[in-house]
Length: 274
Ligand code: BTN
Image (cartoon, rainbow, N blue to C red; front, side, top):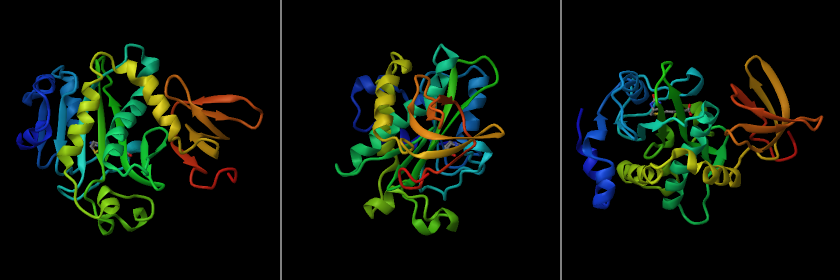
């Protein structure tokens, strides 16, 4: 473990911001199995404070959604997990991926050209030019705990030729957009600031997150086929619900609230063509 990136993260912060996020809240690893796994174990052990942060240069067993692996060459990408206080109402836990997308996306857009805005693909992917720039994995412990481990992997300095060939047309990185390297820790400092501003109540920021997400909603108005559990549901993407669900309008006119989906088809086709 090393604490070196901490100084880079807080370099431009005010004393008040540093007080909110002292050095002991941050654990950095040059190599770890998974930052989410490490944080979940701490949460289970009751050793967590709000916004405890775990970062790594390299993960040997990085986890993606649906049990997928999340791989990145050492030192290229921003890989972190943050302990977020769970909303009191469990029906609001599904808001966390959107709140995370909002805070992370807001920070990324602040370093993009004004003309570039991200697309938000429910539940928790952010895309640029229809290519995935980052993934979010929210995990909660099976026990009664007050925190979620919110894991984020952002393709920062990854080169296109370092992506597995099947992902080269569907993923991108800040390096590919800017044509030069960016500081992972500067980007993380912007993201953390957004979360720390929210300490009074993570729940409060959902209205802003929903608005931000809706303006960038990649699924809005598209004819989609969604696999939820073992059934496929057809409908048109119709926005985001109050719990962070995907709203899907069936051909009958009925509006469904989709809480989780294993697969979404139709998202990449031009609007109106299903
Ligand atoms: C996805 O499938 O899109 C979610 C990917 C989440 C990857 C991040 S990298 C840091 C954190 N630790 C993990 O093991 N996974 C998340």
